[in-house]
Image (tube, rainbow, N blue to C red; front, side):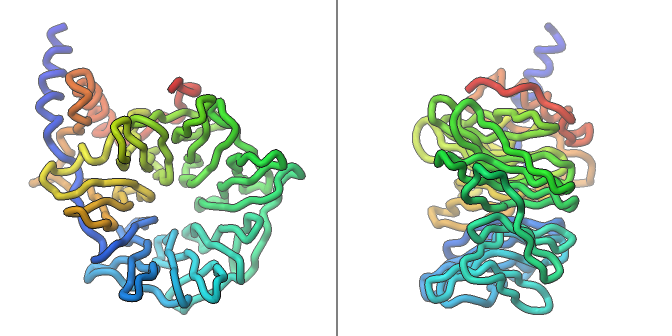
Length: 359
């Protein structure tokens, strides 16, 4: 009991300490969708004409990307800085690749959603596809799937997305590197969607419950785990090789908040930044292996993309605290300390989680 008391006292003191710095990406209404290993963010920003325009971040600010006559969005970026997304012209969507050699359009009615470090691009044009070396390949589905799209790809060529079944419901899909396809289950409801996959093979997304709500999930080795919520429904959109998952959740009292799930504990990212930062983080969409996170929030009341970075403490060494949302009280503080112990030991998630958790 004495040791437990000491742990709780230490953790309570740690709750007030932020572990992320927040940087605004660009000026004007913007959203960050993906971040590569060097911290370069891909997203979209409102331009002077009122349209959304794709961008990538640079040390000097954002660099808008060419293409389209109305809206454009950059949804993915690899470590070489090649970005992918969608541009719109003449009422048509065009999957788009922005690289150092120029801009490539993938055809009318297409959407490019993600790219890996080998340059393989995935997306949808009525059916899920993978595009590499100038060749577009349709990803095979089963006969009971009428429509499909791909949203994520890892460096091994594993692709994730979803498809619409003939009964009208949607189910998450994993297209394995060996050419086989896995149809995902749900969390007790009728639908699911897979949004991202890490190089270690962890798949994340969201799925419906029997109640009709949707919860974020993570899947390792075929086991789908309910990540819970910060109040109501939750949605996962990014995962790194440490198993850190990001997304957003609706809150019981209204509104929404960006989250980080670490080792099975969902944390409100607003509790992990300085209280006087001026930010209200609404949704997190991408996370890299260094733990940098991008998404969208309100900065002094204005919609803006953000980049969270876990800063090294003065003099080097490990971060000395992992804060928890203050409303969880003393028990949450104990969990915060346990999370910190695991974090400092290597920030690695266990290879397997338990079964599905109850809402």
